Image 1 (cartoon, rainbow, N blue to C red):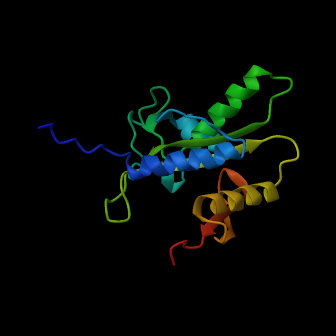
Image 2 (spheres, one colour):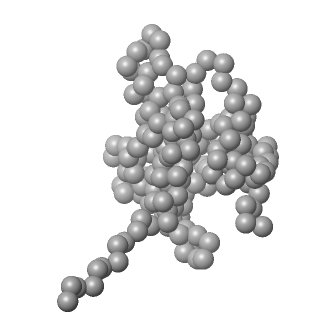
Length: 184
C-alpha cells in the first residue's frame, strides 16, 4: 500500500499577517525596507530626538550589547523600535541623488526588543511595521488617508478608525490610531 501523505506545514500567523500587510502597502505604492536588528545608540535614540533622560533609554527597557556608561565608542543595542531604519533609508535614498532626492514611500517591518516583564500581554520581542513617506506636498491628511485605506483593505470596508493627538519625541505633529474591532 502507498504510505500516508504527510500534512504540509503552514506559515506562522505572524508571517501570514506580515505578508498581507506588505501586499496592501505594495498596492498603495510602498516598498519594503529591511533594517538591522542590532543598532547604535545614535540611530536608535539620538537621531530620533530621544533625550538621555527618556525612560526608553534606561537599562530595564533596552537590551544593551555594550556598556552604555563605559565611554568606549558608540553603545550597541538591540533596536527598541523600527524607526532607526527610517534614518538609514532616508540617508541611503538621498545619497543616490543628493541634489534632488527622490520621494520615499516605504514600510519598515522588523522585530523590536525591549526588556519587559513577560506576561500574557507583553513579551521581550515583538513585530513592528511602520511607514515612511517623504516628498513634496505630502500632508498629515495624506497620512490619515493612507492609514484609513490600509485599515479598510486589511480589515474590511466598513471598519472605522480614530486618530487621537499624542506626543512622540521624534514626530510632530503626532497621533495614535485606533481601529474598531472588526470582529465585534
